[in-house]
Image 1: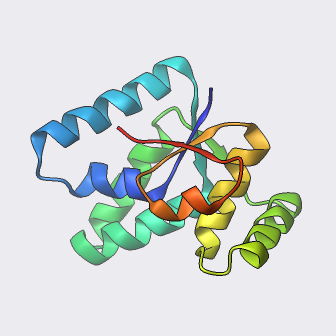
Image 2: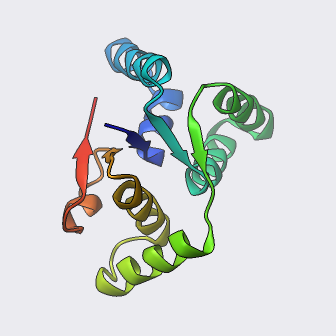
Length: 132
C-alpha cells in the first residue's frame, strides 16, 4: 500500500533530537524508497520548506528540499481534479486545514494511507493513517 507523507512526518524527521524517533523516521523513509511506496504531495513540500526555513533558515530549507528531491518519493502535483476533491473535503470538514484536505484527497485518490500522527485526518471518512 502506498503511503502519503504528511508534513508532520517530515518535520519530525528534520527537527527531532530524539535518536530513537530519528532512527524510526530514517527506517521508514528507507523502506518507502526501497519498496517504491512513498508519495509526497507537492503541498507538503511547501509546508516543510516553510517549517524548516522558520527554524533553521533558508539554506537549511533548501538543503532539505534537495534531499527530498532525491529521496525516491513519487511527487504528486496539485491538479484541477485533486484541487476539486480537496475543496469538497474542506467544505465537509471546515476545521480541517486546506493543506490537510489536499493530502487526504491524494491518499483517497491513490487508495493509500497518510503517514501522520495528526488527529485532523481521523475526521475524513474512509481515510487510513499510520505512524512510525
